[in-house]
Amino acid sequence: MDAKRLASMWDDPQLKDVVVNIVHDHHTAQASAEEPSESAAKRLKRDGGGPAKEGVYKQLLLHATVLSAASSYFDATLRISEEPGSQYYALPITVSSEQEGGAVEDMLRSIYISTVPSDMSIDRALGVLQAAYKSDVSEVISRYSTWVSLQPEVDEECAATFFDLSEDIRERITATFSKVAYDKVCNDLFDIEKTMIDDRLRTRLLALPQDVIAKFLDDDRTKTTHKNSVVSLLVHWAIGSGHRTVPDELAHCVRLLSVSPVYLGASCSFFPLRTVPVVALLTMAYAHEGVSKQIEEDNIDSGERLGKALTGLEGSEVGVLYPPVGNDDDAADLKRYTQAQLTVLKYTN
Image (cartoon, rainbow, N blue to C red; front, side, top):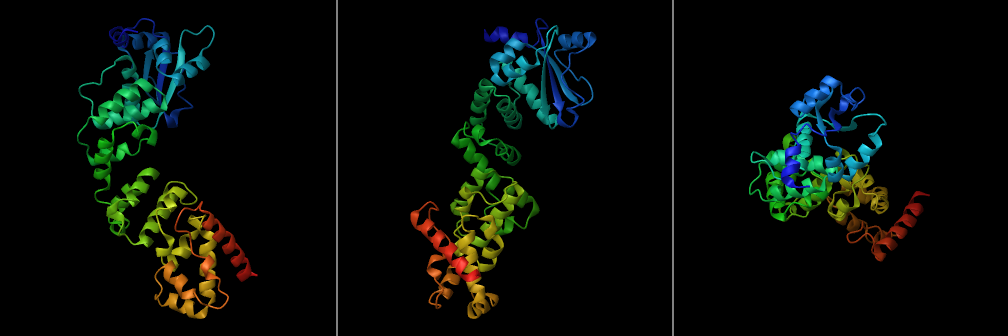
């Protein structure tokens, strides 16, 4: 369809046959997208949309042909909602806030109008991208990804919002903008010890998605951080993100041999690939009076030194108990896992 003609249809009352209810999520049950009354339909056609009833942020009257062509998700939803004898299709879109409702309206308008408004801001554009991604509106995603990529600066709040987007969306944004956003968000966070005791900074750090946390821990600016602090960060991130354990992709960011015995014991359950060798190592260490005393006196401050303290003890077999430091799929590591399991059985039976 001609772009000029499509744009004119947004305000054209003719042939509008879809009732779009942008619904607040806590009112979803009461605010289903039902056919409007005759007077409401006239008002919607005249005004192009407006508030409908409690729980509905906005109600719009749009075109089934336009929405179906723009999104396979809209097309499938409209097919399901079609009822014999009804003049209107129903299209409910659930949102969690008024800001998200505004982003959905911007996204729907962008289906009709192929240019980004002159008053568009980065935070609004990111909201449109999120809304378009959820509804699979590829043309809007492409247009706004390009627009965002061309922005030379971003403030801290917008940068944080950028990292709230799914990784699929962020990959569509240029590396230049992504780096600007990364530096803006992370600039004050690289001193992990300081960050983890500051409520505001800790919240910002723990809100970052997994791929950004991995990049952060691989950044030269965090390389000097004590590994105990890195373990603490990963455990807090896993809990806050709803993970039962630290994902393997992040577990490789810390060399457990550099972690103190206390942190090894407290955190090993969050690193399932390393749990068996760590437990075996600690069990043997605390079972040996001399090593246990050294640990209690804080003379042993890493898993590596713990292993060395056990080396040479009669029957210790400590050589098989070092936590993996390389690729966990490596054959040598798998062999060590097996040997460690046998050692655990030996010392616990």
